[in-house]
Image 1 (spheres, protein in one colour):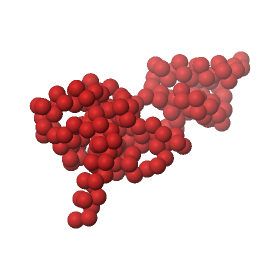
Image 2 (image 1 turned 90 degrees about the vertical axis):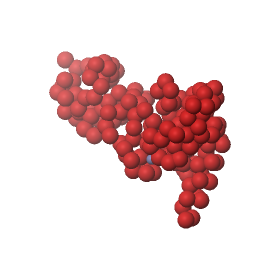
Image 3 (image 1 turned 60 degrees about the vertical axis):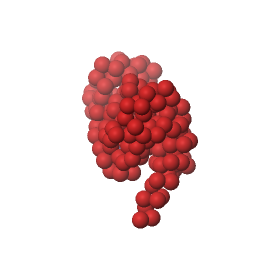
Length: 187
Ligand SMILES: [Zn+2]
Ligand SMILES: [Zn+2]
């Protein structure tokens, strides 16, 4: 029995929904096709953003990756609750440990297409450009100065009332960090 590419794609996505991650050899067995065919299927699905190819297999394109990643800037492990996700124009995904490194990375690179982050209170993924930040509060969970992200100005101000620091919008936070960083470096 042969099945069409569209049917294979549907099956792969169905399995992924239940299993989150599938290995290529498992797919070749289940679909009874060559590894080459599976690779082609996965590439096509990945191009549509329906899955992510990982070493030896594929996984659902979620933002809650289970693998431990290291921040490209400070080399600290990326904490899920603070992560900052940058996608480049060539579809490369960079995860920074926290908003501190995320904003610096965003300022340093000119090939970033989207920047998402996890806001501090509810843990929702939001667009960095619309986030508010509190820099230098007493709550320091990753890099110094601590930078925490909030989905609205009111949340940021309420947080600042309790824990100190400065409330900033995206542009202010970005400038503030780049300045602080260059001063730090020159010493
Ligand atoms: Zn970092
Ligand atoms: Zn950090």
